[in-house]
Image 1 (cartoon, rainbow, N blue to C red):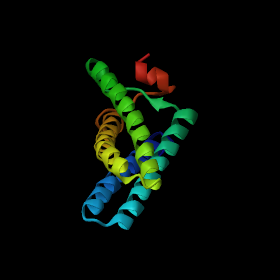
Image 2 (cartoon, one colour):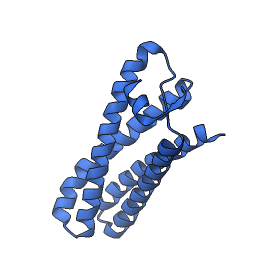
Image 3 (cartoon, helix red, strand yellow):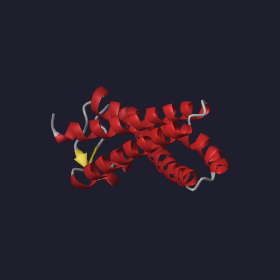
Image 4 (cartoon, rainbow, N blue to C red):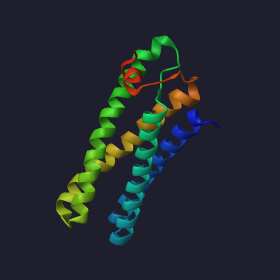
Length: 154
């Protein structure tokens, strides 16, 4: 397995793990297990951070994979990719805010932000795994290019 396939596989694995940990953390807090919730959510944040480090390293040093599927689906993929990137960016900001509120013991706000953040995080993980599947499993990936060229389809 080369870096072309290994790094996206690792990064996608970490983002899915982070979403699973957020789901477990949600169940734990509903059951009133505050310490276990805190530990699991911190683990989820670490998994998300590992995703980000791997993803950005690949983006900077290797580039991103362009669409390799049928040309008639390219525009739909690009719209989906842009929506995923926007969602992931907003979810990351919400995630950092939610974590900060929890660490500052502002639990009323943490609860309100956490509900929205968790749902966004699940959608981010699902759409991220979908992008991965489209680029590496369903269709042969295209060439690696700078991120802006991939997003805009240039």
